[in-house]
Length: 218
Image (cartoon, rainbow, N blue to C red; front, side):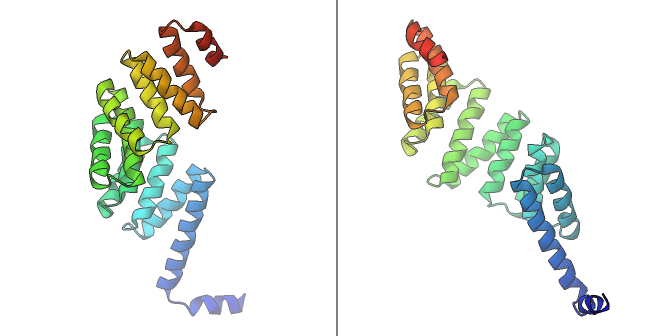
């Protein structure tokens, strides 16, 4: 024990604090991966206390709070993370999703449009398009959502959920044949996409194709 104390004293306090912060951050990441969000919040709170300029700690505490349903706390943390790293679109995307969870659709749309403009060809741009379509649906703007999903399926022709969501929007707009085509495409890409079966059944009923609808419902 005496030897251990002497070893610890041989390191400057700043080195020991830095190592403790690294260990606490790594433990926080592990807690997030294991969906132990309360524990993650506690760990990242400790990191932030030592290093309030540690953007990733704010980010991970924010997404942990969002997972716990604490959208106010999540938005506070993600705002702070984004102020420290204003060009980090992963942070902006997660803030947009926290806005969606809080039903703050205008704020979510603003963040998502920034990502699309600044990263039009990147995968995160497609993710933002998908989320923006959902925001527009929530706002009742089905025509706007259709434009977004048209763009998305052209860019990501193997995205089953994009075809599914476009099919749902087509059905909302009364284009039931187009809806069935999109939802069928979605199920070809992902046969386990349960929402697509239910949504296609609704479109088929609207077309008076009830036998086919019953198969989807089964």
